[in-house]
Image (cartoon, rainbow, N blue to C red; front, side):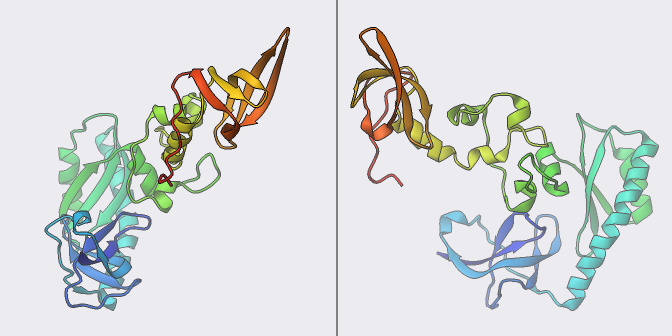
Length: 283
């Protein structure tokens, strides 16, 4: 086990592990750490705690020091200056007639570098723009192209559910989402109904995927022949969440459709795949 703290640099951003060393660091405090981008000031979202060695990326960087009031004030001043830098960069983009959309600007704590995040349909030759910006800010300039999901995370907004974007509210990492998940959950395959504002498949499709995989595994599919308390019939409709099956029963010249609990039906044959018995150890 390794003793670490979790540090976040942006609201709803990913939390990174750092070695607290001999410091007693509590949640809500600010620390100065070295990152791949340079020296940064971050908020501690989880104080000293232990995690398995396998979940730590080595080498684990050590906290440089606790942040003081000057560091916090400088960080907040940088956030205010980022808005001015954003307006200046947008004006320079229009001047150079570049097909790119500026998303966010970020100062490093010591102001040794400014990062400009943008989206574009393809590769952009922004060398002249970098020279122009360097002449304005007199520091290192880095332009970084990001994807549409990262853009939504940075800008935020409301999803079709009426709630703020999950990615900007609490998601630390983007999980892979596939059209297979929509099929497993019986959702409409219309892209406009299962896509988020970013144009990609909604992240929430992955939230209940394991539950749907389990229910699909133990439930007779449409077209399956099952034995019910009233005889043998064919499944015509399945409700995975409630656990009810709609079964068509043929008795002589009459055809009846009745609902049965999944546990009251015994699979015989047919359907897309045969159900498997529930595993007692499966949560």
